[in-house]
Amino acid sequence: MRILLAALLLTLAAARAEAVECRDITYQGNRYAICEVAPAEETLRLFRAAPDGTPYGHFSILDEALRARGEALAFATNGGMYHENRSPVGHYIEDGAEQMRVIASDGPGNFGLLPNGVFCIGEGWAQVYETGVYLSQNPACRYATQSGPMLVIAGELHPDFLPDSTSRYIRNGVGASADGSRVVFAISNNTVTFHEFGSLFRDALNLPNALFLDGNVSRLYAPGIGRDDLGFPMGPIVAVTVPRAN
Image (cartoon, rainbow, N blue to C red; front, side):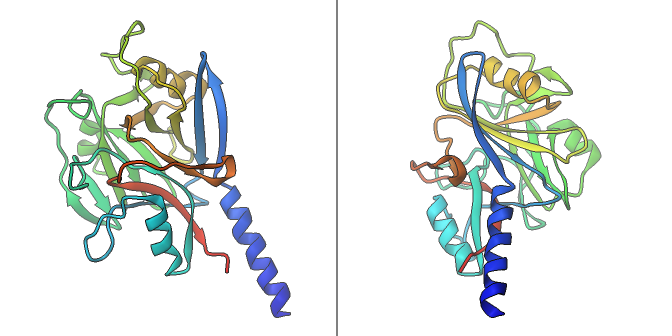
């Protein structure tokens, strides 16, 4: 009986891990890896630092910490822009506790290219809000990370994105359906412009709101498609976790 129960638990854990659907796609000549998450069915969270304040920085370190408490990573990617000490540049909430306030003013770099936005994870839902909308609606976010620029705003591309731009980088971002039931993370596998990346979310993934997370530091952990990217230490990490298989 114990052997059968253990086998059943392993099967359930594997099925949950596979519920994060990741795949490689090509759109308008550019290659992307995308991962779809249903927040009502998966445990989607943000992680930045261990209890002693040390930033996790790498997927492997976060996974080791999770395994020590009976969990494991099913999916992860960098969760927004960060300073050299890996603290978040903008608004950040983890497990209901605000670690950084909302930055509503413009400024240098991609983060300050307004409008920017906030990725918010609630109870069984997740949404991308333009920062002004986020401040006016004050949604009940258990987790939140602010980044920028917005890629898609109420079905429209960011007004500063140019179809003929020559600024091309590896980029990653997140988009959400209008009801918050579907979240899609994407990372480009070749350099893309903001206009191309925003078009992916709006026209190929049919998402009304999407947010840029970061550029060349972008990384992905998606074992279903063989991704466990290495690179510089990260700040916030957004991840889906599952019960650890013993």
